[in-house]
Image (cartoon, rainbow, N blue to C red; front, side, top):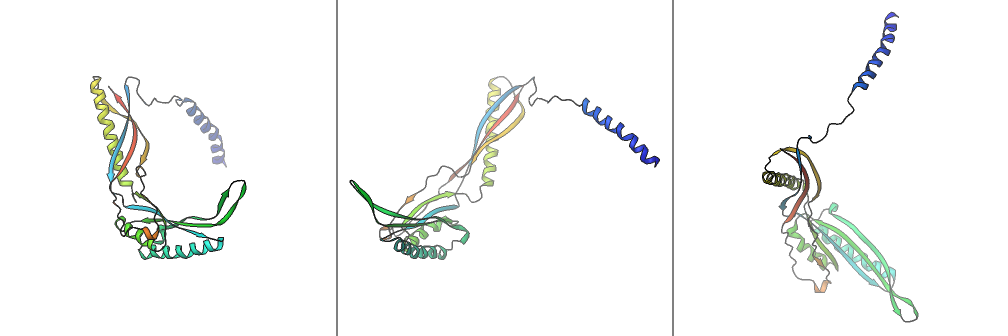
Length: 244
């Protein structure tokens, strides 16, 4: 019982000590930049290049019919053949995704008369990813042969851009440092250290310049070639330097 009473008696003292310690703690925040230094802010873009290894293409079937049922039936039959051709080409299920399914009436317009429905149009499109760009041209030809009459793309990109982005980040800091050294030398000073680095944005896809191809099966070329070229990978950073 005495031990319990002693602990209870010491508890208020411990709380008082904590409160006193909290009151004595400094409330000021240390400035990020020492007052006796000169600050230089530099913005820089780091860059590297990669050959794209992923192509995304939208392929679809547009069907016309006198009735909605006729348009849908024709569209479904042709899309079944297109989908089978994609899978025969070795495209995995995870790389095939339905993008659009539409059914809409077609109208004839005249002067001073209500529009008249002349038929129906059915559209079904797929987003298809090709992980072997070299084979994507031949797959496109096969799709057109099987009834695809609307093809948009390809959009070329990187499947895993992380390593390229890290290279661009390193290049961005290097460029910022070189520019800071230039300014410091011109001002008769020297770079003491980096105070902060802020990443403002990244781009591993580059500008979208898709090839647009819309072909009917009868007019489709015998061979379609797709050249991957190179893709710029960029990172923008802002770096604050302390000069002395």
